[in-house]
Amino acid sequence: MEKESLLLNPESLLELSRNAEHDRMIRNNFLRMIMKKTFKLTHPKIKPDRLLEAVRCDVRKYLKRERNKQLPQGVDFWDFDCRFGNIEDEAREIHVTEIPKCLDGVKEEQLESFYLEILAKPGHRMKKPLASESD
Image (cartoon, rainbow, N blue to C red; front, side, top):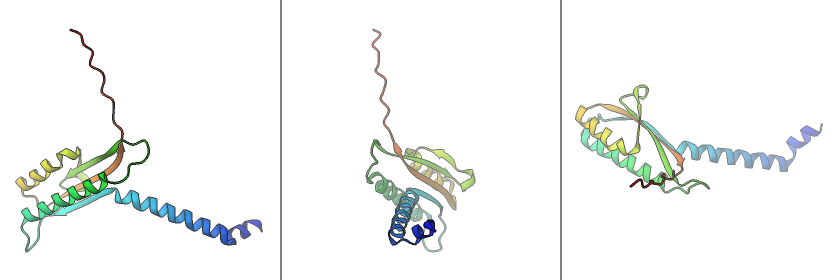
């Protein structure tokens, strides 16, 4: 009987709704941290070069938006895990600085579509080892 009263208690319902809202916000924030898309470079009116430039612009905007987000406590910077390929199954891991080179490769190979995935994750700086002077 006591369990039923807890569930029907207005204060507990309010607390449950707050927790659900918090969980939804966390889930939405995490989902926004992933850019996962197959880009098509075929359009009846738009040239493939313009479509590729639009993709470059989208990638730059995404990276800038993610880098400008507030860092969690104890995190030094936003790092990115990237995957690139003709299709999702064939995508290989690349470094974020290799994205422009891969897009240039798409232009050279004249592909009709490609897959790009960018996952933002917290990064921590590693201290460089001190160079020992052995002169």
